[in-house]
Amino acid sequence: MRLNQAAYLAAAGALCMVGLHLLSFELSPEVQQDLDTQELRARINSVRAQADETRLLIAAAKHKQTIMVATPAPAQLRRPATRRVHADTAQLSTVVLAVMAHDREASLRDCLRAALTIKGAKQLLAVGVSMDAPYAYPKLRAEAQRAAQAYDMRIDCWEHAYVARPKTPPIFAGSPESKISEHVYRALMEAFEVTGATHVILLEDDLRVAADFLHVFAAGVALLERDAGLWCVSSWNDNAGVAGRHGWRLDALRRTAYFPGLGWMTAKRTWDALRARWPAAPTTGWDHWLRAQDVLRDLECVFPEVPRVKHVATGGSTNVRGGEAAAFERRAFAGSVVVDAFALAGFDAEELEKDVRRAKRVSVKAAVRTTEDVSVVVRFVEDHQKLAKLFDLWHTELRGANRFGVLALKTKGGHTIYLVDERRCPWLAERLANAGVILKASQPGVACAHVCRAAGRACDPRLLVFADRCELLREHFPCPGGCGHQLGPELPAFVAKPGRDTSGQCLVSNGGFTPTCDAKHPATQRLCVCV
Image (cartoon, rainbow, N blue to C red; front, side, top):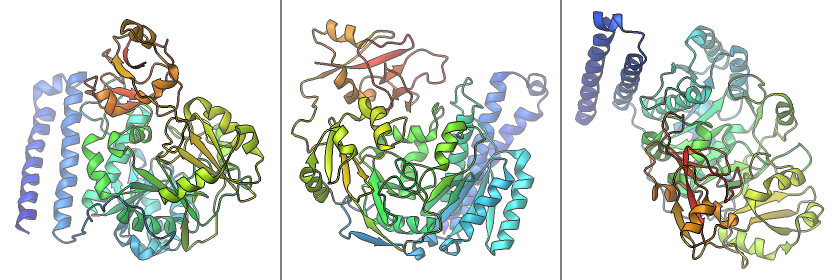
């Protein structure tokens, strides 16, 4: 208790100092005369951001004096012994559901109705509606209050008006990606640090949930706690495809090294690892930034074979539109089916390896109409567009594979197609290896073909993907802006030129683009693989 009081007093003192600092900005005649200068506005916003975060820390310290929720230490890295996991909704008692809302009260109303009328909702530690548009606060708060009365539940409203981070480049500040990233950060901080959750579910208000949506997370809490190789649980399957076209099972969970997002949960231990790293300029979105982080490398997420969320909105800052919206409408969705126990598919690494080795090796063309379990050796980066068309997969990059480079698909006949990456899968005798290569950093605007020739070596385009890792970039460049995500044939690279939204960042493409030896960009320095 003394420690909590001391922390509270320290935080309160810090807030007082910040408040005095703000007053000195806002009340002095000198400031009033020069209030329109960009530099001063940036300083004021920075101090306000510090004040907001200090208030949250004070609230957290006060909360912990009355409610102490233990955050379990990560378990030793091991696979669960069981092949099924029960969805015990009692596991939700330390879980907060955070609903992300901007300015669509009707969408929030429908989202809350779907999420709060299903089994498990009453067991949640808390429900919060996180709002980031001040002009919409009154109507969103009214919807939350009506839902609280209708469903006999307490719903907290969190006001998180956008303030750019101190290190956010002016060219990026105020962009949709910046605003959404800050909203996600504030919601996670509120739920973990103030409300005291051990786990937090983030749900966008343009998603509609299935009847057993919370069952996935109840099972997920148990899996996260006993398997330190997992960091998140998602209700979405990127490769679920058109409803009825595949053999996905309603009662099966899988694991993937690619963060699915779209109705997802993580634990306090993961938040503790990410909080101080949160980006100032996630130019392709906070979700792609997460996928690029080396702190999450070799960790995986759990997801259901059949999605437990359905995307409904076609407007907003980064929402799908047109043909892509229609594609979402056709995707598989669990709907009203309720599953109480889930099979763990592909969780046992030794068993999975045996299954992949036993499966008949065939060509891509033969796999399309297979009537037995088969495996196909492919290159995820180069082949993903062809594979997406043939197998009804996500179109932008190959998603859903586990950390061994294996993507399992289910046919309508109940058979499994294993797409096996030639680079990543350790079980392949013909694995494309990078033994004997050296990594060389280029100068700005210089292609890898030139860099390797100058070193008396050659550039092999098949091997460039091996350098697409944040930790390797940090060994060759300073990366003061952290590690980020972009697309382009010259990646991975360091953005050396100032004045850009990605300046100072080390960039990876996460398999979304095929790098070439001749690509170059005047603003970047490439990381080259030379043989």
